[in-house]
Length: 342
Image 1 (tube, rainbow, N blue to C red):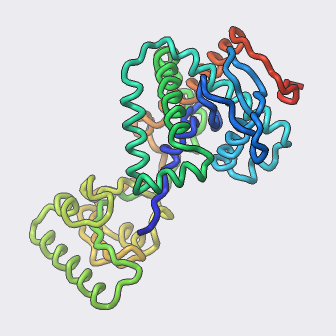
Image 2: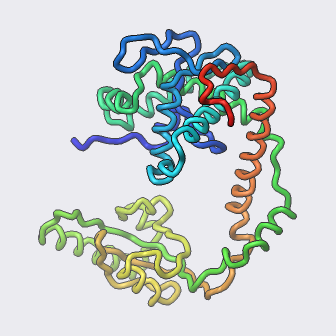
Image 3: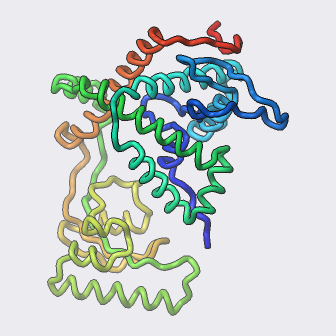
């Protein structure tokens, strides 16, 4: 059986890196736990800092840097001097720890249930309990640490949602200004709106399998030409995930689809059903439901995505300011002076 891998989102939950506002946050020894042993030495590792009496260890920073490499790429991280990268990792971990500590007064009652649910989801996605624990070990975690990290993350995110997010709004003037500030961004070439039905052909398929697939798509085409609804047929017959939307692929410009599919789609008239189109994925039927000439996408069509973009930016700034205030109030003792700002 092919080994499954945890999605970035689930590993983010396990590794305390789900903040949309910061770079990855790393792992921590659970509050009240015993200090970790120094790698390969069998000795108790000394903390590098105290945050309101909670200890931060070198391994927290090491694993955070490891996560940053995965998130941002080795090339990006390699450009940073080691001492600068280490201080950045410390700052990000500190932000997470402060937000977590600040959120413990929320009185959440369903934290354990959320943790159980997320662990179960991660284990299911990994394929089995053994594969899940093997992946945790590969990341320098065990089930206990994963559980503590998820719990910390749940409280931290709830804190942001309760104390920061409600104050963030995006007004109409902001949307208009953002839209008008980058007119080229919303320009587009000719577009077609299309839905499709795919009968997938496995890469290792022989001639008989290809023939069977082609006969199936041909039969489906005849049914649609005879009056059967294309979208409803896609929902029950297509092998593409778009089947949930009746095969709808939305509007797209040239260069977005594989060449064979693109050529067929752009040659069709509105409402027309294509001949059978073969691509690397299998056999397709395409129905074009609309065409748009080259132009500028109106604000009404990008309002949602643009609003989310502005809100995310404002959220980053708001949480950064909130953390800055928490740092002023916190008792932070840096025991390793190489982490001190220069």
